[in-house]
Length: 241
Image: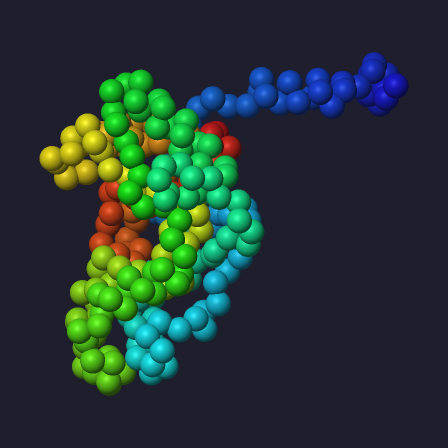
């Protein structure tokens, strides 16, 4: 038996300590500014991921790729990480998330359903290779020589408003979702009841299940134009006081 050195009484067992820690855990969610949400996401060490190489090609034209990356970084895009091992769970048809994010997504979806809100995912994990295909499809009308010569910055920036450079998308991690609201399918997401349910009281319902907004008001430039439907998982532990 192990004794407490201060009182000479038996020290609590590991299981007893776990119970005490659980009971003492705060049930009050932290309040975040838009910038604090952004800082939390960018500093969070995502499990089962590693940094994507910054040397990954985009178009295959080295000079054009250099300019595209410079323009992307100037907009606030950051190089992201990608899964190390296949730890995916299919949360709906062809929609994959890393396991911990998947569990919390399904819990949040169930809670929303109980309150009359049908939230679904229309984008989850996306590989850098898939992102490369998407990006090149949207930039193919711009001559690479013009991009390299800095004669097409405006046109490239127009693509970057809605489309990440491969390697720079939050979806690469497997901890990001784009949400659609089937309850208010005819409305823009930002005007939907689902968005209100997720975002009211400093995103209380989202934070309860470990999710935070990707592009909250007040966070500054983060790459694309703000996408109110995109949420990232950070786990609830870091969201409580």
